[in-house]
Image (cartoon, rainbow, N blue to C red):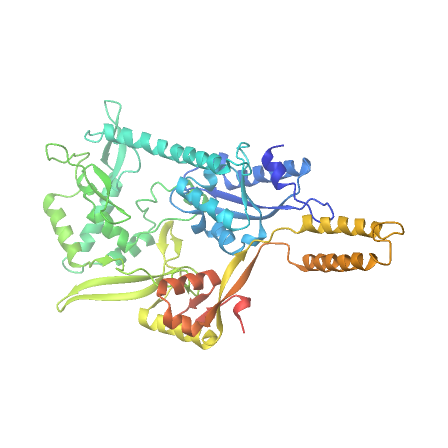
Length: 528
């Protein structure tokens, strides 16, 4: 039994009974994995681990499971995960320990681990445990050092895999060799005479690409990209991703579908001209762009025969440019993020601004819209099926109206997390003191005379009152509300938006938006 087991399993109630350790099992799996780390395997091992602790006399009790599938620990903070994030933000008083199969299933970045350590300290000294790493100890004086070390190792392990792949790709970057992965639609991997991987045209896919271009550029009755996508879907033509679906998609029985945006993106890619491509980050953005590789002598690398001639390529690009307009993210940060939500899926709403060049200059089209990810035909789309959009001024004015109508003249409060220390030790001390005093009140003892008995009775009254007070006090961590000294209306008029956002999120206020109605959702504590 480790020091970790001893520390978290030694707390007892006033009657000497061992208190239960409420365990939240955290499960995570990324897109690319195998059965050895499946959610079912993680859960089975975690429950076996809890059973083992119980057999050793520790009162571990599973109180919940947070399942997060297809989530990358290097890209998503624990607070941002769907199920684990909900437990951390809203149900923290319900558990004492987070149990995970392995540290890298929980976290892969040192900074994220440091955030979680600070969160644990501020929420009742919660602890962490690993099923497969017994040395993971959260109780000793060096707990933060040990955990940070494990976090560094997990981050290094994730980085090493990426480094090996990047090293190989860099070594053959300027060669006519295929580095691996899925080639662009219209091409397939083949084995050359030198034994290395190369590319060649895929005849069937080339026919589809040329058909799309022909229908798009037809002089008599040209079709839109959306119409072409519908036609391809109707005849069950495999999409670029559908030719090699991931195991996850194949197992689910779903199929990828052609889309107008997908067709435009495919036709704009220079990979169709047989060039070798690479991804590079876009300055100031979070996404990457795919561009041809340029050798030191300034030339491109031809991996296969081009699908179009140079003239055909220029015609296609000119046609696509005439029928597109740039879409860029908003300059300002979305106000009341995590407060203003989609009323259909309760997903986040973001401020989106489209900009379009017109004869009278550039016009902007700002709107709030749902950005919940969903899968359509095997592809990720943003915005739930029932999504709607709202003009920002109208939406925020409606939010203010609903809030002020219900809470404008109510005293503003802030929800805070209260950590309640156990009173078991003091209650046992009182029980022992009462026993000693009662014994000393017997004839011939210290308080056995008429002169000293009143003194003992006063002591017993004080101890009894303290015992009753401690007995009535809540014994578990909980949310409490602290007055801010002004009404919500006064706060709304005087505070800055970031401070209002913080208070709304902390108090659990949500404003649900639907096409023809709005709903202000508040915790029971705030309802009047």
